[in-house]
Length: 149
Image (cartoon, rainbow, N blue to C red):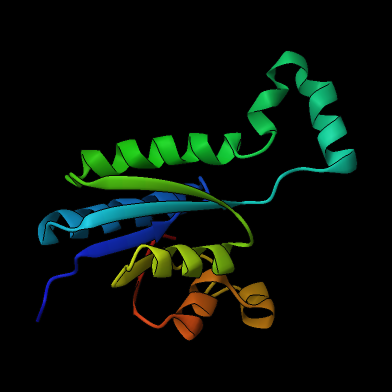
């Protein structure tokens, strides 16, 4: 069996997704693989943005554009390096999570995409779909679903 060369993982800043990042980082470290961490985001608009700017004032920049995703990626990168991953790259992508993760995985030539299991066992996940289930169904490469909940 050939070791993975590029391991990719998605994060949304939740503890569950950070657990997936840590699992992917340990695997990347053992394989000597590059670890690509992606965070999908959709920018606030209209009323939602106005309310945030009103409440945050001068700190509103923290919720505009890719700033929240970049903060999440900084934390994820730190956690990945703490698990032994040496070659870590982070990517913020403006898109829906499944579309973004699959696109970044293809563009990065990832041979493994790691996702957490959040949403797999919920009623909502079964009816509407979940990120891990949709990724596993649509991916053209190996997918590892790690237990994070």
